[in-house]
Length: 242
Ligand code: MLT
Image 1 (cartoon, rainbow, N blue to C red):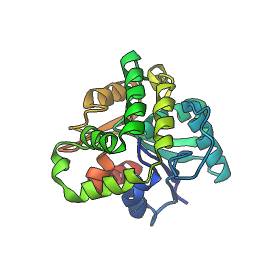
Image 2 (cartoon, rainbow, N blue to C red):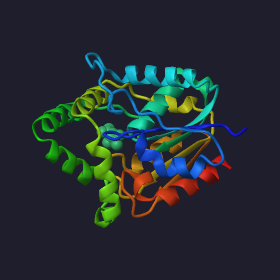
Image 3 (tube, helix red, strand yellow):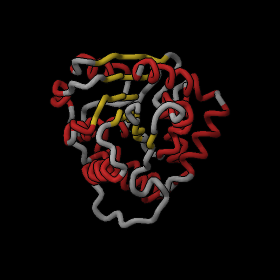
Image 4 (tube, protein in one colour):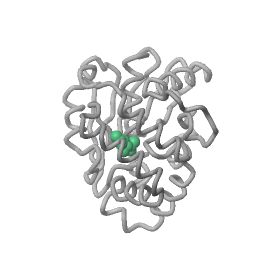
């Protein structure tokens, strides 16, 4: 049986963002695309969410599904999670696919921006969604109405309190840069050439520090590469898995 894939979603979306890849790969192997607590729309108590809380949740998810090993494919926040999961439980990882992400944590300016994000989403949800569209989608894809419809239908389902928790949690994450040299599993790094959030320079830095890694740059693609170029993305992932 082929090794399963666990897809880890970006912020502020949920596991549904991986539908095209799940459709593509589920004919040949088991695919999981969990949504983090709150991002699945279920009401929860959010009082003390930190990034480690999400990592705990995912480790429990892997155990519950009896996954002794899986490929972890994480985009942006999903990539931050994959790196930290690797640090905590490398024995559960067959390989990493790090998409539009980076190893570093938030600096002071980044942390303050998270707080701005909390205020914006609480005071003006519409503006927050528009800001996200502008930041996450590459310039070339912004003209594509199908991508706009898909993005809007995904973001609309994410509760405001889950978004606030996600922002605060990301600000509490640890830095994975030093850990990159310990990664020994095969690793694919994918990035869009128009990614403004985690640009090509971040992907190159990871590639230089991860021994067994390959870098693929998708052209005319922004931060949400799997949504913007679903087929190209899946084919690169398939080549890597093959
Ligand atoms: C994401 O796409 O998950 C976020 O842009 C990551 C972040 O805000 O650091």
